[in-house]
Length: 201
Image (cartoon, one colour):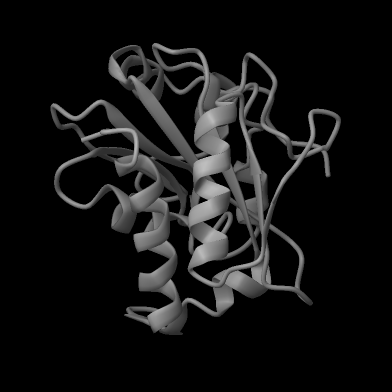
């Protein structure tokens, strides 16, 4: 589906901050930055996953849809997402993890992309060990996250890890809006362990 807006400046002319969308951040001295640029009501559940992975010690950036309907209008593709705050945070980040959601409603699954080949394998191994369905997608996959302009690849290392979590998997994370299942906590712990393996704070 084609994006309504090509870049953030265009979006901000037609959508109002704190009414239609909001930006939430946590900046720490950690080298890890966790992103959910399609958070809130755009790709539901991604904000919660990002915050839980980051905890208190790591940085995070959330761009969240708040509209009562048509939050898909707020979706700007990762390779064109140029909101100034996230670009500033990316300059300081050594490692970048970007959390997304895709529409698959029949299968609990995660697509692993980005340009950090070693860390993608670690994430895959951790998810499989924890009992989750996952795959590392190749470069020609639509959701591969390998474009050099993708925000996940704009940290100091110019490579990161992108997770595309299926709708069915995300739905399995919540009992209610504010209550998480054991699967949510196992998933978050698995991702955290993959990053800790390489001595990331």
